[in-house]
Image 1: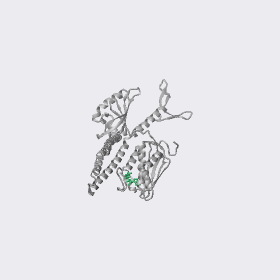
Image 2 (image 1 turned 90 degrees about the vertical axis):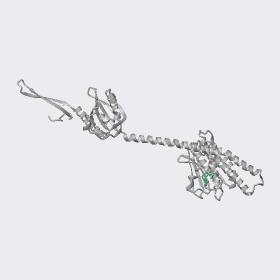
Image 3 (image 1 turned 135 degrees about the vertical axis):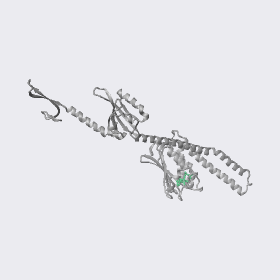
Image 4 (image 1 turned 180 degrees about the horizontal axis):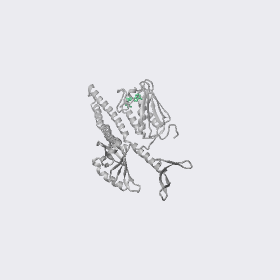
Length: 421
Ligand code: ADP
């Protein structure tokens, strides 16, 4: 019968069959009839289809998929293997797989073959292989033993994925990370040096400075009326200079000391009382300028009281110092904006041009000459305090239109504004 003959069962099912026939003869040898044997081959056909499907999957895979026998001779080689290693199937089949082993990896082969012979499966094994052109590839291998129908191991199938690009990217990333860590270390050391320098400068220079001040004053007192006007001016300038320098050093010391308190604060600070204290500390300038300082109901925080006092005192003090013609109107508020508590100190003073909004937070940065007293450290202290508690500080202002300093303190809030304590 023709190949692929199908018989139809009573219920209409089509059954693919294999057939064979044998003549039935009588004693004289004349053919009397035929014995026909039909075998249902549905299962075998299905198996054939499955293996065709698998073969086409293997063929179209991007991974190199191949097999080898126990002597490491290649028995199959898909298109992915041709693309990956540059060897064609017709070149590799029948050859030893050692062709794709780099010279320094030749020992690996016998080890792999031994593990395969003992029935072991090797998964995601990373190594290097070599293309026909001699290029080295990073590959991830999965090697599985293959068995014959009697369960004997006959060789191995190998799936080899080219991971050269990933390995290079990971190496590059590791390199960049290492570089970054090194620069961070250098930066941290430089920062420590700077910190230490500022501390020593502000702390240790105070003593000789005190001496200069004391002796200049002694000079004036010890020789009353003996200096001519030129000499008096000179000594007076020395005293002014040392006073100014002491102010600078004191502020610089206060600035460096904020960093020193790194442990978690246990103090609970009522900001309403902080504002009250600040008002008292600034009584003289409030009275002189006719300033009115108002505040919303403010929250209670866990933080160092000294930090918050210097923060508010610097901001309110500045609002008074940098006033316009009218008496200062200063308001302190706390509001929730986009889920975070935002504090602000606003004034009706001279304002700040937008080009200076960043610079004014730098140490010693001032926009005014000596006619308004100050060291240029106040806002740098404010920024340090705010950053110490995980927040940020900025200013919204235009020249001549007053200024509003805003800041957040995400790591300290324990009770919201307006709540009973
Ligand atoms: P200082 O007040 O000692 O000069 P700060 O660091 O406190 O130093 O302030 C830096 C500069 O920012 C000041 O010199 C001033 O020009 C400007 N500034 C600060 N606060 C205000 C304000 N409320 N209004 C206008 N300008 C201000």
